[in-house]
Image (cartoon, rainbow, N blue to C red; front, side, top):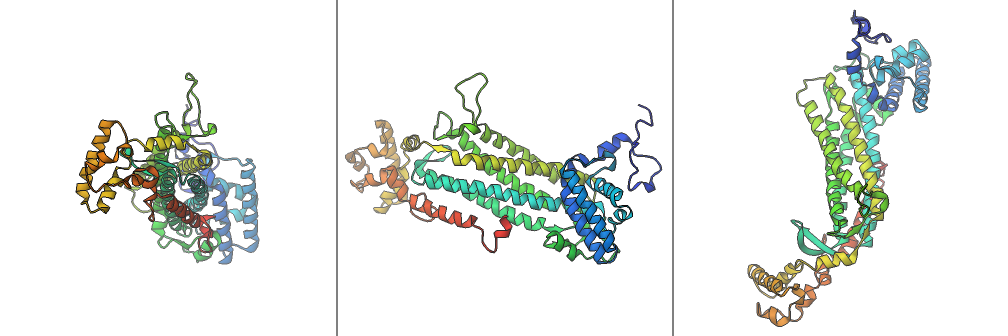
Length: 477
């Protein structure tokens, strides 16, 4: 490669006045971000239109110049949407590509658009505009999944299954109750996303490079045009802050962690060893060598993608940990992990929202599993406590009953009354009502309990949470 070959021969840089030599071609490609930040183009144009209107309001642009700029930007957006726009690595990023095209379209007016701003506050504004919209899309998919869980829980409110601790049978519960536990996880995720979006919805534009601008800009007006809650309060912080991106990735990592736990149970419960559920064929794949296999690939892949999102969170934290104020080129590395986090989370939520309505429970198999492992042992202890036996003594008595049942090879409910009465004279014939699975589940009839009636109340409360209200309707659009 000759020296000339190693140098950029593209268009002159917008900032090239200070430099005597062209940028090395490899450095040009290494430092360019246009290949990935061009997805911000609609938001870059949206921000530029608002900036142009503000500049005309304060007298920097004439009305004719403003109209030409707005018209030119709208034309550029149409070209991008039609995939007719020519992107150039030489122009480095989405901002310079759009500005160069605008200047070719409208002439000198295009060169005035950058007055009172910098790419530093411009990119920070673009990312916030983009992420604000993406959070809205994520909330929509999250809501679809929550509604699917509510529908399935309603269908399975009376279905008895074993509840587990340490992956061992603990107590009988209803499948509807278990589904509502997943709903509660996702509801916390929804609240976190809504709270995160409040901090995303702050406008950096007007901070310029890092110290603000000497022009009498009207930041409140620009913020209003762009739908921001307020302008950022400190120009240094405005251009260098990526807390909002880190916070979002933390929210995303928690959502993926919840989906991963959900996935793990789906993988277990669709196995031949559990056989509690059937996943729809459309969300499973087969084996290239074993014709009998039906693999739960969607849950497995979502479980795997959780590590990817966790990695992006760690990457952004590491990116920011040693940066001095204000903007640094390091921050170019914020976009790809943030973009991929949004894409991964959105696709994972969509896959689950599409799959959950078609999950089929196997009530007989669930009931059979619940009848194993002495799931009603705690109910027997509670029975004894209600008859005046101290809990620790009741615990000991029930342990002896379990040992007796193990010796007999049967469940607690199958032990004869006279054998149970050898353990405690407090046990009477009515004990069998609480030793049944239905009796055990029905007895948990308090708020948050697994009784079918309480599950149905929880479902009603869940639907009310997801129902748009006058105060929160705009937040979930």
